[in-house]
Length: 431
Ligand code: HSE
Image 1 (cartoon, helix red, strand yellow):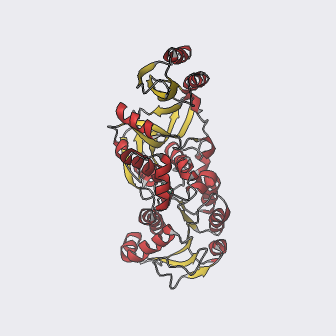
Image 2: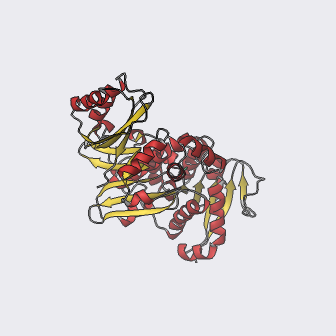
Image 3: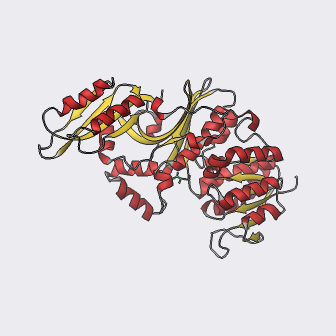
């Protein structure tokens, strides 16, 4: 057997410790698959004296992960620190500059600096592997870059954030508000104390930017991802969605259109009979549509020690095997820059919920706004409560352009009888 592949790990949190555990527990299996043993020889983390549930005996300890990436005599540096800048970026840059392969789970780093890191890795002749960065344990990078390489990808979309999917599922199943579920999830450790990156859609947007690059051979353009989170989704909307035959999911979706590259993350209604509607709780799923293969769907756990470490280890085994490929599916020089298709060009049907004073002429005023912007109403529902309380008017539109929908809602919001900002949720056709 060839010499062992020597690995340094920067960051020993849940995923770092999980990676050590997989490598230790499956050492023989992994050596057979990789054609050589994989040996962790150096590690770095913020605190040394901490029980991580795995033995660090025999590993060289570094307080400074960047020094480790620079100085440790290793073939691969695994970056599991996280964050789009700071030490995570410095670790990757130092490793690449030193001719060491990099494996990372860091979606934020790659979404923001992926182009330059890929260029540096290609220049240095090393791999920059990141299977764990998108949808945790789901091997979607391999699927897009290798398994579907003979297809033109026409659409890639998915549930890319387990925290949001968990919150939406709990809201529906337990009939709880967003705030209550989030609070409970934080107490149970399912959601971060600072939840914004998840619930405001940024984590999904990081992953979507990488998926889009892989799918369409374009430069990573995170700034062009239109991003909306789930804070404004109410239990009422979830109930109406059910009534109309939909589920609300936070989807990331990327498509190449005549107006340019569409990259969007938003909560939307998907038909209850769509396979992705049944991906519940903290699970992730990705659908990739290829012109020859048609729809392929991948589902699994998007976070956690085991699933994420599973992806990290697969990337390390590829390096042990000598399997190397381009970071985003084509050489960096061939990644295209793509015009971003603005959200105003989005075409689809919309769900709208208005809270109004129940008085004569309200529906006429609302209908007039739709008429004046040429947006066609598909169905409309009002359930009267009492004449002293605001009542919901809920409607679905036919397919229209988002710019027209927004103009309509601006007109409606200005009406005296409309007592709160309209809620608008896109209905995603997925065909
Ligand atoms: N926080 C993410 C999620 C997992 O909730 O899916 C890591 O990206």
